Length: 132
Image (tube, rainbow, N blue to C red; front, top):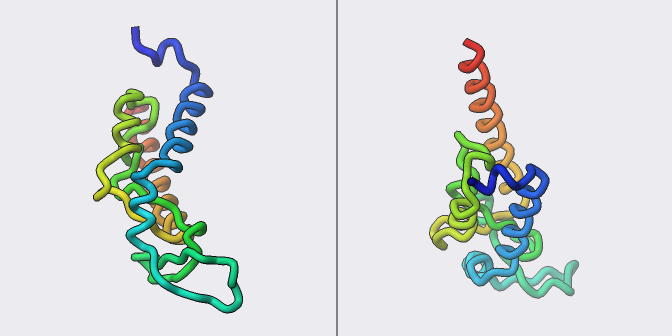
């Protein structure tokens, strides 16, 4: 019997959130952040000690304003979380370091929005195929 028959959608979302919280404290995340650190000083923001530069838009900002992007998304564009096992989800969250990129929140939001549009289009296409 699969865990999917015993776990509700709400519980699956809680598990996904737990994976994200663990990842946010991981050495893997720290390593990705360290790759974008730069020496920088801003007289208007004297309290900021750690700075980074976004590899996509070259914006310089406080490290706290950067997100870690999975280049190959945690949830593939042609699937949903319900199609994945918990083991696969864990493997995709805690992936190889080469699949991670620290980028500014603006770039991360743009990339994530594009991925969500693709997922919605794929979901609609699947739904249309089932109707036909």
